[in-house]
Amino acid sequence: MAEFTALIVAAGRGVRMGARGQLTPKGMIALDGLPLVRASVMHLASRGIDRVRIVTGHLSEMYSREFSAVPGVELIHNPAYHATGSLRSLMTGLAGLEGPVMILESDIMYEPRALDPLMMGGSGLVLSGPTGAGDEVYVWTDADGRLKDMSKQADHRPEPHRGELVGICALAADHVAPFRAAADRLLAEKPKVDYEAGVVAFAADHPVDCPIIEDLAWAEVDDEQMLAHAREHVWPRASAGLIDPAARKAI
Image 1: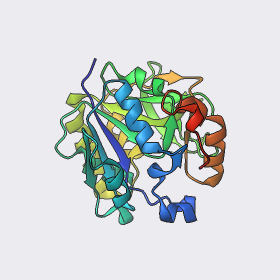
Image 2: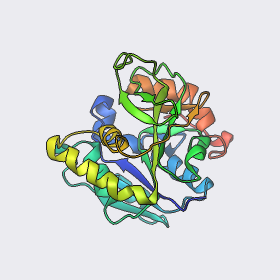
Image 3: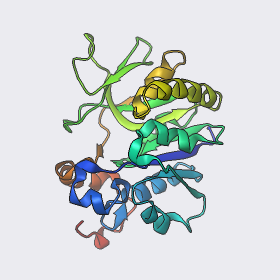
Image 4: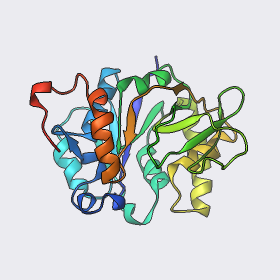
């Protein structure tokens, strides 16, 4: 089993969350008193991943209060978060890391089994079956299940997509340097590009496996409607074992 460092990209401004996003970074939105990123750190620990680097930006002081005294958690700030996309934040977090690296979005809730297909090493990203979330990223693979393309448009390619991007991927140790090189080339052309485009660019020359968990309970939290849906339909499974049911409380 690979000895991962986890990298959680948490620098975004959460504009679509409206008033809540102005006051709270999406990864620090709490359900039953537990912020999404804290739940992610706990899920990672359940799989033996206890080295975590969080890339902060918007309202970074909230992450400092939550994690500054947590062993194994390192905070890295992207000072240009307001003018860059998630790929630049990812590259900020990769600085000095040799891999293997487990990369996670900050604004997702998920069952911890979402991590399992990547635990043995290699580069890959986890897919799910249909979610109907309204902001899906569809993933296409070749016949061997390796990444070809991603898009928010289901008709982006003529062939059927394989599944939906969960927001969890991994880079093998020997793939970190080539990923950086591919990302640097892309950022030189598109400074505000998001990390998904960097993964696709990297996959053009390196194998990225795409295991799928058809019935995975997971959700991304981009706006209030998605948060309400996620709390009702995903959180009970994603938070199982993390919270004493008697202690649950409203958002």
